[in-house]
Length: 432
Image (cartoon, rainbow, N blue to C red; front, side):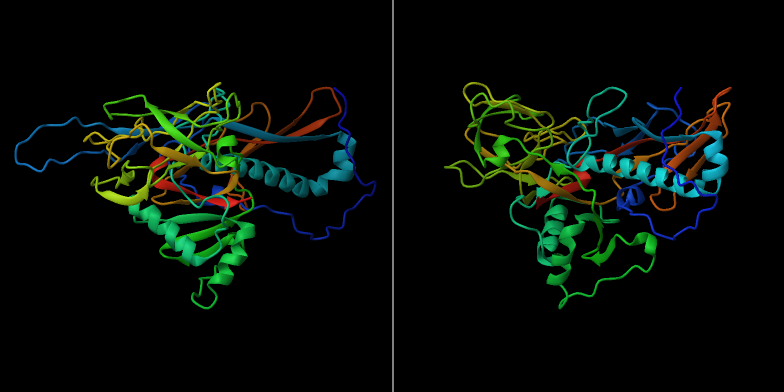
């Protein structure tokens, strides 16, 4: 094996400059829910899974005549499906004369880079399910299907944030632990809009430097790693699609919708993660509204949905769009425990999609989950597991020498899994 092509300074001692590392925001890793009994503290391997429960759903009858309904336990799995490592090596001479007293700096740089990769990966849940390294498939059950903003008009005021939170809660939201991630570059204009009206709480802990403060019972954070949803032609060209077919005429569980109006033979009509909204005032057709998630009362929220696959248009401009579901249920107007529409879907209803945008995120109830179990010892090499204080990432470190060769190798690695319960979150669409 060839020796590493390292670039080292040929001096016997190093004078540490004290120059700080260029850190990205790690608010995702820090603020996710990592409380898993018998999973987070146990040794695990890639592909291991934990399942957590979701609140059951029931319908109510306005009568004393009883008709027993089924009880369905709702669960969502979380699999340690992702892995990454940062590795580096030295010759024995390099280690003894150049590196030994500098290993803390090399190791710190490696862990920061690994934490950045993990942060970027888990934030992809905001726009679409993260691709599973084990199966090669995206998690189509993770991430919000609702949104605020049109991806064109800037979200740059406290008034808009207040409206976003009102829309989020109008559908139904957990009353505790509401949090919001905002793109870092959009924060100054939002703060400026409220300087005369609001005094935001300041967190004096430097490790929480991404935290903005509390407003409307929501904690705000800023990030420079929020994902960009690259939309299909339908969104970027502001095309209006018309509903032509519903796959379930009984309204019990509509998970696929067929539309006309796309560019014929366009292979990029719809992208996975694209968000759509049903339009009001379409002829004499009723306006669609979401029902509240609990109680089934009509809310003020227009019906929105998320595409879970890349879809091309056929020669007539028709697109067949699979949509994100909630525990297996999509759009339902029948009076069941999973009903979420105020009226039936009707052919002729129209939708529009968001253009390419950067995705912020609101959620509550600690419904953004991250599992980072400890990895097993890498026998026969010395192994240690620890938590990086800056990123919050659980990292394994092991090292050793190649027998009979002049090389010492170091590895930092981790496995993790993440998911967002769809009904507990809402995307914020910021112009790119």
